[in-house]
Length: 81
Image (tube, rainbow, N blue to C red; front, side, top):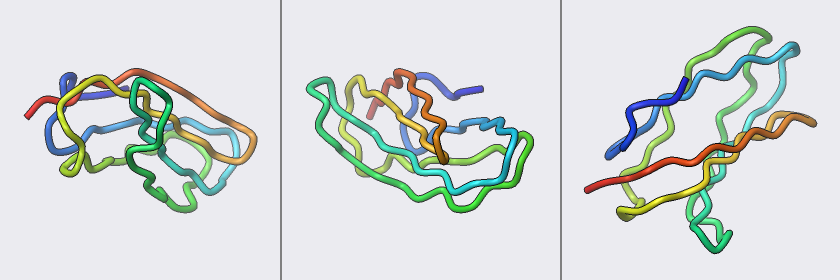
């Protein structure tokens, strides 16, 4: 689950994992440069909803990379102001 799209202040993400682990969200621009990094903390096994702030991100298209242990997930997000 990812929403809203496009986003302005924050985006909601649903993370499903088989084991508890530390998660990090990295937002990258279209050239692959890191725009923001957010430590999401130690999340339990199962499904967890988290909010990722976007208030310092300029309008545009970005890649959202979620990493927990050996798991990495990527998706595209749009930010509008």
